[in-house]
Image (tube, rainbow, N blue to C red; front, top):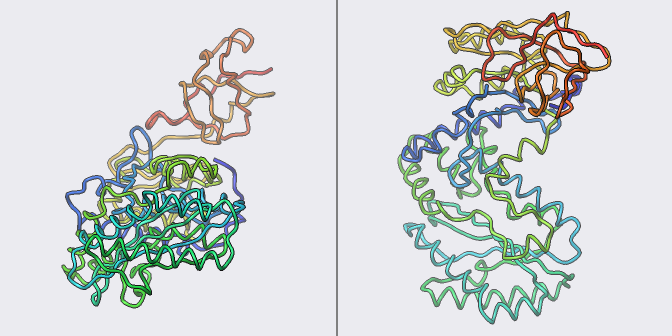
Length: 464
């Protein structure tokens, strides 16, 4: 954990956690809409094995969430995983777009539809037409004329009571040279005519005006073009959002079901989810990632890397597995984040935090480091104390279990010999160079929870 000055924290806890409260609220709604999708029901509700759950705060990005919890990775059904994956995809592309020397042109493709059309039918026409458009000799000729080295494609869908389902696809056409305005206009005319012909051939119909729209934009607009969907949880009815001219995105439909109880919205969300489940959210054409210098990573790898990309976080609280389960069963994850973040930003006293946690049927103790330990009422209280006799000069080699992570950030590698009391430092051969700096807080726990806390002999001293 990187050290962060608490004085740099200026945003209020309520501002920080409003997003999280919204996403947890929506996640709970969707679990009720899709009860057969078990992985959605345990996402962010189950701790990872043998770990306490940590509530953490990121001052730099002004975020709070939980560490050491399982994630489902669903970009279609989970507002949390969808947003995290979307943001990571946007980041990996934005850096490359900013340095790209050629043109990157934005295209939007759709087919006409009516209220009452099945989403699977409209989606099938659109997907089949786009497969035909970007295949065969015709497409090879287009790529050669416009120096297109590849495409990035993203699927999106909205629904309105007037026009029904509106699936569409955003495509970035990546060229290794700059296009003129005339070339962009010519490209649109050529693609629009070909797309309309294909759509009619597969039994659909396309508007001359809206079927294909080719545009250019700033590098930021271009990099965000394919990666805006999935962030909708921040703008839902939970925070007073209204639909764009009556067009609702899927997470908004789920939110409307929660607000109104109207079964129509529940059935619409289910239709959307099972129509798109198994489809890719974003696809790069073959070889494009390598050509642009983008690592080829799966969505789950992005989820795992999401927290590692910003290691300047503060641990505000730790919860035992039983305590976290109790919080989830009461649907109070967002509330817990708010009060633990408030405690670290001095907006919520420990007494107030303890009272609020007590209202959840849990207990809270504050550690010397300021981290709050939360545990179930029938669990034994964690016994800890600073070890005043455990001082070193010049550094210290500590006897501990392999892999122990020290509260102050010092990590001892697992490849070393244990040093036993009574032996001098020069008598022991260390394979991993297990030297600890001595500036961290040292704790002794009477009970180790999950093997994550240091346990040492307080009378043992080493000098160099």
